[in-house]
Amino acid sequence: MEFWGERPFLIKVTKMQFDETPIGAYKYELDTPILLIDLDLMESNIAKMADFFRSVNANLRPHTKTHKTPIIAHKQIDASAIGVTCAKLGEAEVMVNSGIKQVLIANEIITPLKIEKLTSLARHADLIVAVDDEDNVEHLSKSAFNKGVNLKVLVEVDIGMKRCGVEPGEPALKLAHKIEKSKNLTFAGLMGYEGHTVTIPDFDKRKYETEKSMALLVETKDLIERSGLRVEIMSGGGTGTYNITGKIPEMTEIQAGSYVVMDAYYKNVVNEFDCALTILSTVISRPNKTTAIIDAGIKTMTKEFGLPLVKGIEGVKLTRLSEEHGNLDVSKSEIDLKRGDKIELIPTHCCTTINLHDKFYGIRNDRLETIWDIEGRGKVR
Image 1 (cartoon, one colour):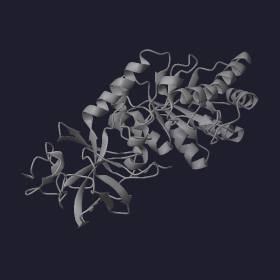
Image 2: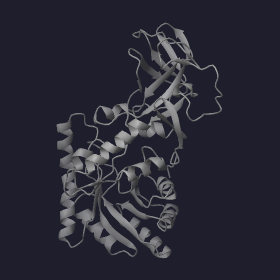
Image 3: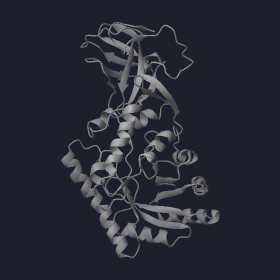
Image 4: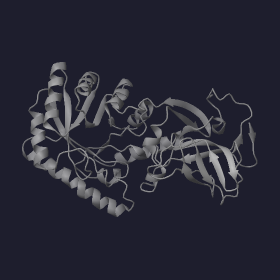
């Protein structure tokens, strides 16, 4: 390889077989666009979150919808997480097949085919599933009874997200008793997601709105326990509220996910975790003095939370993404980017960006250490 000047992030590759990705390769030798994960930063994020949960009553049950990759989930469990949370049944299958036994599906499973898959999967793991409807409870009970398995069930309570969930109080109480009376189902507790508060920039306001929402879940817990049922699990929380919801005495587990790799958008809310995820791209055109074009577009990284940020090059800004191209404004940069130069970008939404890729390329000390299949990618069912 040939270095251009004193710019270690700008490399002209002279001898490289791009159909191969040798372990040990310098990261700027890799063909692009490609999804990189800084292993040191990821491991530091895992350790920081684990340290927090040693100081509170709640446990961490990290959400795998962010990384969708079993080896990362196992690293989180090795660092004291009690299991994982999944958004979809397909994600749960991936995690169970990797040997993970404690899985919460933080969603409603309602169609006959999915229910059959769920109760079959319950033969191989300790599954917990959310419900917000009595008919769903009956269908889950019938399938579990026919398979001879037991399902733990959480009542999902809408505490302000305005998505799934029953209303707090009496509706949740009624559904809890319905579950408890159903064959092969165990009422295990409550789930409430304060997703409408997790990205509030100001911490004091975020804390106020989060505690107000979570109070609805705690009050519902008290109501149900006064009726004679035990609420074993109180599940909720996200990366933006882990250190708020996680300190509420009644909460038993937090479902934070994005913290493990972080992104540029969430970094403005929760600064203590580092952005371990980047997209490596190549400058492929210089149409004029103020513009450079890279080979990464919206099929490589998402922009619903804003355009990704250019990493490590002052004065260079991403201004536009089309399907396969990105436009860089270089008018304020002292570096004269050339075709073939490599650029790293920090995604603004890690979850949806990761879902565009088949593999993580794990980097340590700027060298390729490992390649991980993103096995949960595309598991939308």
